[in-house]
Image 1: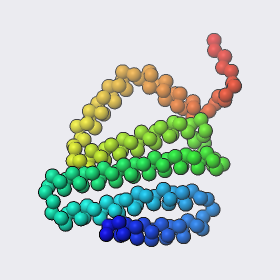
Image 2: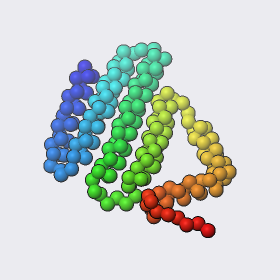
Image 3: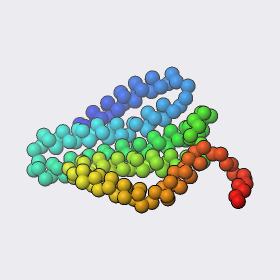
Length: 181
């Protein structure tokens, strides 16, 4: 039953959005809708399954495992969609002749890796929360470790950020010569 409800709501949702996006000039919104199709369907399907487990009055441990698996799968599906969204936006910004100064072909790997790190970190956080694991101590420990590493490797981190800013500004092009004393 939840499959039919998810399919129906997903169909209505995508039809309405496709009518709205058919009036735009770019195909970016069409690609975003096709990207959102799968996670919306599965989210609605998982809501139906979780409601069914509540109605069945299963033992607490089995109910906890089923709900935890459902939440984990939902987080993983949305994380995959987030990764696809980042790739889509980065590809769109370089393919079209947008004047986005910071996103250029040589800075694409930086933004790609940064987006992947953020999405995978957020997905890991939400997966731990879906299993009722308290992450407060882990986050506090990570903050302390980051502060210690920041002080210990401040020169290395300064050089890393200087390299990132040089890469973003692109004052040097391939084939340029740099004369040092």
